[in-house]
Amino acid sequence: MAYHRNKKKKNSDRFMSGVLYTPEKVPVSKQDFSPKRQSPGKEKILKKINELGESAAISTRSRKEYRAYVSKRRRVRHSEGYQQQRLRDATFYGGISIASICIILITAFITSGVIGNMTSTTVALNDNGRVTYASTSARSVNDFLAKNSITVGSGDVLNVSLNDSISEGETIEIRRALPLTIHNGTEVIELNMLAGTVDEALEKAGVEVTVDDEVYPAASSYITAGMTISVIHVTYEYVTENEVIHFKEVTKSSNSLAYGDKILQTEGQNGVQQNTIKVTYKNGKEVSRETVKQEVTKKAVDRVVLVGTYV
Image 1 (tube, rainbow, N blue to C red):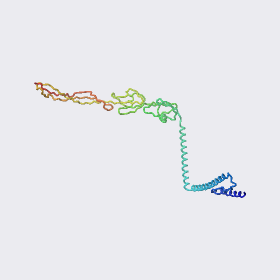
Image 2: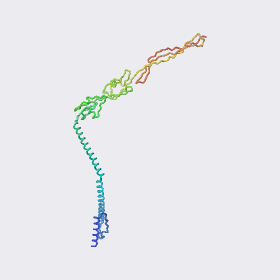
Image 3: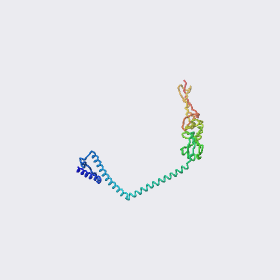
Image 4: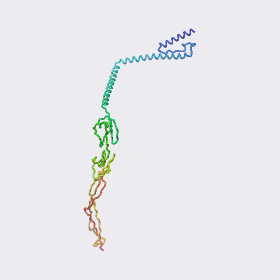
């Protein structure tokens, strides 16, 4: 029994010294223990000891690799190119930091100045009967309309001037002109007008209408939004045309001629009739012709033939 205890102790010391001082894995086998002293828990002990040996070897290799990496890193850091790159990086990032600080300061200065000068004023806007209320920092009516993207078209009417200043509780009223389209012959005119008749709209657009011209709708009609006014210019032209009057053939009996004989007594001649025609044009295009006068300038001469009746 003493022999086995000494052998076990000797083997155990040799194994433990391998774990503590040997960088490689030291396998442990079941032969290092006496078969008589083995127990069911020795399997777990052997497995644990082997794992510790592997960990020690890995840890030793890792330390060697880390030392090599640190040594290489130090050599790179002490190189001239690395120092120059660090200097360039420091200059670049320092410039960005200074620029960012300047932008922040300028923005804060401008914002503080704008906010300090802002005063809120409540106004009412009556846009062609539609009333809205708004708080604004605009100083004038023109600024208020521009900030709210409100346009005043041709023909629209404001109750105030665009350059007037805005006061608290003020009402800005816009009377919108009605959009009209005028077809003046072949010309198309767009017009905005508050109110009135068709005749007044034509006068405002500078369209001249004669007595013979046709206007639709009637000149006395009141305008409405989106109305289309048509003006048809009517003109007349009088032309003269000559028309031929063909002669007629007349037969007369004569007892001085033998029965059945024929003789020309008078040669026939055509006459001339002058016709006056009224030509009507609408927007420059001919639409009708009408004969308003007929005059015979040369009478036709009948052709007379004598026929004998003497037996």
